[in-house]
Length: 337
Length: 284
Image (cartoon, rainbow over all chains, first blue to last red; front, top):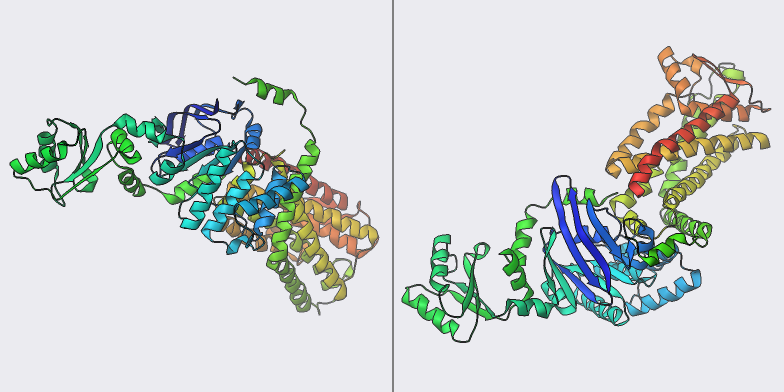
């Protein structure tokens, strides 16, 4: 049964589109990953889910409740942990959790019991009574996560929960998320870390330019691609003409399913191959054409390959391309009420 | 299409709505007071600044000729009412700052994703906090003024002072909260506070009576809401309370104590009504 159903969600900030007819179905009881580069629309989708933002069009149904008609009911069944940790530096962690308990109308006894439980589970006991202003990034993130879980939500929505965290904090959060899913909580997690989504997600959707471009379990998505991945570099920095020439040379070979020129990485070539003999065949063909081989690497398909297959660029390239276009001040204004 | 679960939820009467509203309002108010206790600089500065005005300005005109001021009162007593109002006004003008910081640092979003019974609790908590703070600061100034020999109002006078201050604080808090949601950041809000504060004080009857002012300034002072708060408080310090007495001989006509309070009441209601659409939009 689906816990989240987003249908044809579109949202634009002025003339800049953020989501374009995004469809997303998240089954209950799983950890669902949203993978995509910064600026792909993950945060906008999550803010719409959390009722912080209204879509321009489309429908949002969570746990059978229409989020656009009954937002309060949706807030009751959801815990939302935003990308930017919003804590009150003057309060202690415990006071912040007590405030959270009151905002969710928990009876005082229940709130205190739950706070004690979360302090233990997230190993916050040593510092929870210190002021939040003294916390490290990892401590703040754990506290924020505890706040999102305080009212035992059916759905936990986490926007980039481990960005910039130390290994210990990241590991503690991963462990907790696995436990939560085992206990029946549905977790929706956005990330641009491939390894995080690959390690945690039962199901995932890859988002690019405001729409879902691939959906399924990590294994399904990789199997759908099939074959091994080969990254070939003729020389350290090639050029477009040479890369096109090499592609034309390799595409007809038996066992070569696809050749993509990766412009942002020195015009290297990303190949999809079937069969063990193809590598030797590649080397021989290049040698016969008098072309050198600067580097050649073979690997099993990854989620990055899934992204590459769908968009023609790697996640990292997408990140770099978007990084130059982002206006942090404008984004902050958009997130402000 | 709404699911059966949602339909049932719609039909059910929400249990303990008032209790939930008071729980969330109390929690938000408590947070503001915890901030104040741990960073009391706002409280201290809010008392210190008017105190300096009271002491220095009081001393500056301590030897003013007798009979110069209306009713033959001393300048210290005349000034006291102005400084009390200035204290409450300055405190209330800062009401929007915590809200603005919550907007800027994303804490407001934490409140908005919670299933609050009513988002008015966010505004209500700010109003409760700033009213208590402003009254506390004003009482501190009143106490100091009494120690300095500038008098103390009787019981009925004290009631009038409190009612007048409450009306003023509500009105200015509404204005400040409106600005906190309308302006893009705290720099802009602080700039508005900075620009509004002293000119409004000088263009009122806080420091001098209308008869001392040139015509244009007299008009400004007679239209300034601070004047409508200062005059009843000044009257409360002067003796037997008579709200029907003329407290202000304004260029446009005489203004009684009752009129002053009514003007403040209308202003308060008007400002809350004026900011309501903005608050609804920002908190929806």
